[in-house]
Length: 235
Image (cartoon, rainbow, N blue to C red; front, top):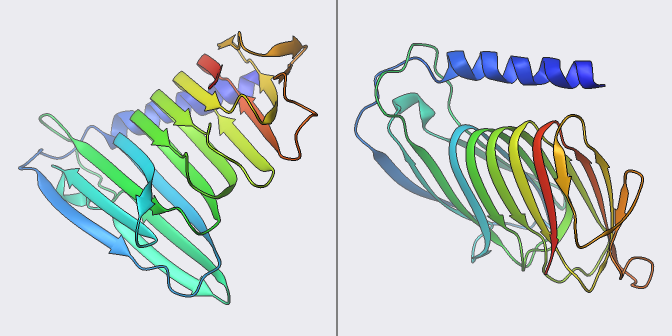
């Protein structure tokens, strides 16, 4: 398990090294995009950002309202939205490039999502910093694959149904805020990283809060810590 994790981290460093090393940084390009919900009753959200800053929150009147700023031309985000029957799929992907980059590189995504439609959120987060304030959203599942950097995820809002959370940690730090008044069960594979879960009861690799087993709704968390730090906080 640790061998494959180390191999993954090596590949992340190798690929990112080539990925961020190639094309002259130019002037900042800014754009806003919005995606209407249509007739979908639930939506799968796929965000893939290789390098940069990512912010996600609720409050959008459409399905998505996004602000994007970047100074590598080929980093222009690729956005696709499709609906089939009552299910929607939104994909937001950082554009690719293949030449060496020179100069200070910047890439920033600020994304707002709709509070009224159930969401399955999948994030592929490469290198950078992320702040995900998911309070107020209706989330059915949340899955993030992290590379290198710092990430804060706030899932401390109200939950009307069980929630599955999967975090595959890489190199860096993850701070996860969870609700004190809803039952939480977290399974953490430490790898060679560290875990700070002072608000939880610990039995082996299982961490639970005082509300676990006492509420109709439960949040199930599965974390592979990798190399880095995992902080679990109740609020």
